[in-house]
Length: 468
Image (tube, rainbow, N blue to C red; front, side, top):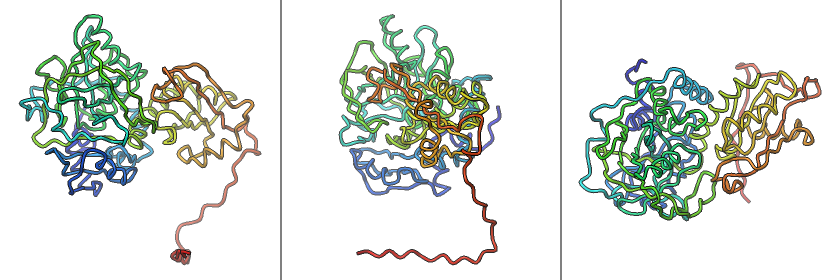
């Protein structure tokens, strides 16, 4: 595995290199005025949400450290960092995961790294510029940090992204998504009657972020999914040893927090404005003790807005997983898109060049199996732009036969953050919006001739608005 100097793979492996690259390409907004981490920082960041630039807050009241937001809210920006066209990102993500599955390159443990430049003399989370996002949030949250844990029985490492609410100078409350390997590890630690050590790695690149967000269906519990980051980085991911447990930290992270979860210790966590646009409710959840804090000399705190950033970062993983599975199981599947209206989790639009009758419904069922959080799957023909909501709606209104094209699955596992899936159970629906097979001219789209480039004398006036 080669690692070319200053290649996109090298850039995305280190958040500081990412910031430098964004700056050099005019993709970094700098907010030089001092901002309050409670609501104000996110309010300003939201003004740039979805745009082609990330935002760096240089001065955060009460902290010596800056904050970066917006790394994931533009796929065009991400494509630039990866050196890929925007629409090629899902396929690139899928390819990297397949490489890891067939020829895994495990992380390596090195004696030290940037994250070990400073070890704090005492644990005080209030020194970090941890934002409070929404008006109804219960407090400051880590929402973009990568958790590393080890199976208490096998020692296999796992990476995940969970939300952590700050509840004290050295205490956090964690929400663990059901079905994640971290939940399994905590249960095993409880059976043994021992704490579960973890590390919280703040300020990492998208390769590691994608590794941590990879669905459990793609990365089984007996595999070290940190190796997925190696595939993105085109070099082994570097870790440094923990100082209070055997769990490592990411060498290039901005912060490394060594923590432990004592089974049975709970604390109220929430509310938090989640990806759904609703507040996750308050409930007793595992408490995390922070034992030691390491950091770079000049670290940058990284946060993610619950919105387009999550739609993109999680959606890319979901698209990659569903696309890979569908292309092996359903002939003719061409592309998959997780819509923003579906929160990047809940609605997949599948494009298919249907080879036989019934394969569109087969694609619906395969998509649900590939990514359990999905609530809705819409399958369209290859003449429909799956990233254009108007085009998808056109297929739904002109090609969907409601009597035969709607597939309803009741009492099935879904995503607990979706309020229509209480206790992770709910109803899913699939829409076959494809032309009847075999195809007939009746369902052919009307087309116009493409205009030739150049040679036209066209006057384009400015629009003058008249305000009454």
